[in-house]
Length: 604
Image (cartoon, rainbow, N blue to C red; front, side, top):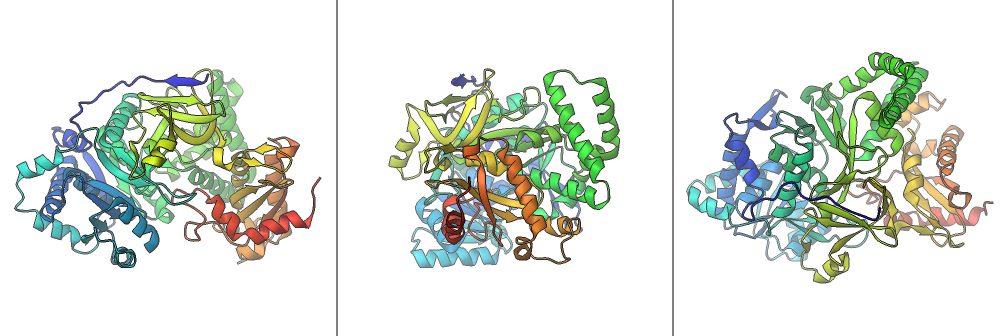
């Protein structure tokens, strides 16, 4: 199959916009909780639809009283927290356009987003964030920026006070000034290559994509009464879209800004569904395996993991042998139930995006009773183009298009997208917008294939395909994902463009190292730099490389690797906020390592 179009199941009035989702929930007699936040006693306290609506209106009135006009751009720079969504909807109620900024951004990055979008104001989380914004404004001469309000200070209260004299009908004029065709937000791409581009996502994108997603997920995943805890950055399109979708569906959202607190937060909040990037699921699996090994139950966990995978595969095939059913039931009592309890006990679904999960992990989690619905999309597509659904899932793929979306595979294998998800264009860059489309289809830059049932499989990134000196085309993700799944490995970058053979740079997982080291004879307190030279670590990485090589031809296999003594992180400039590796930056910063690989020896 080369093309599939799934007709929309819901078509909304052209006058509708994203704010109508809040009104939908606030008008219900049940007044459902839309959010929950921790109080001073660290207890989760619900915020009802009516409470959320009232506070959104109060802050929106403050924005209007402060001079925010319809169509003005207003930045948001904060960690993932309740107030992020609060001010996001307040900006929309005021008829303005929100511009997310990652809270880890440098002054130059902040200056680019605010300057390029011509933002007139910013709502920041802390004094430190405000200082970064003011430094950016001063250094770059951001003449359009007039106001900065602070969440942790008295900024939101000041807005509430400022808006007390703004009449309800004035607010309603602002709120209804935008229809489906108008821009709701400008989200800047993560910037793995070049300057970030401002993707103009419309109210149509959020409204129609949410309504059509609810048509197929609203009774099972994002149903009224369901709840999720948000820990991915809301500045990223994936978390942002799910946050809007939750309000549209009447689901409750909690927030945790620090992933280090994720486990206790999962246990106290007890979500019914979660969303994460593949690296999170890899860490959950590896941590469980290392803990079992530390407790002397490594063989039991390995057997349980394989049984979960076999059970899932057999279930997908339509027939589960009785012996496998019995083994699965036994391990459900011994292992799987404990894993589910560690995630709060109520999680039944997880939405995965931002990169390929891998078939083995998909089957493992499905087998333990946590169904991972892997999807695919970009900032330019408001997140999901395709997604697996509980009743229509094929593990190892990213699902079929959501209603209202379409996928086409170009002659060179590139995935093209069309439909309610696709952005209006790049802000102020008609030239880039024109380049991004061909015959009305958005060019994703990814390579993939459609099976005969319309399920999409991602095979690589078009710009990242490696062509060796011998002319062999290699898709690095096929190797990188498998190596990164090993417990001791954090990141892997495959090399070989215009080189005689394929190689790799590998980093170690600093969090997993202490426990891994204890079970492999490493000295207590060993550092990552020291571990990178240990024979046990080198052997473990070599085994991971050998296993990955088994999935490709000899010409595509990794012939040499180096473990570097520092990890790729967002702080180091080697990862985007959505945890994608900035390939060009790594190659630049580790140029000496790359050259050493290719001058050291000539593999067979």
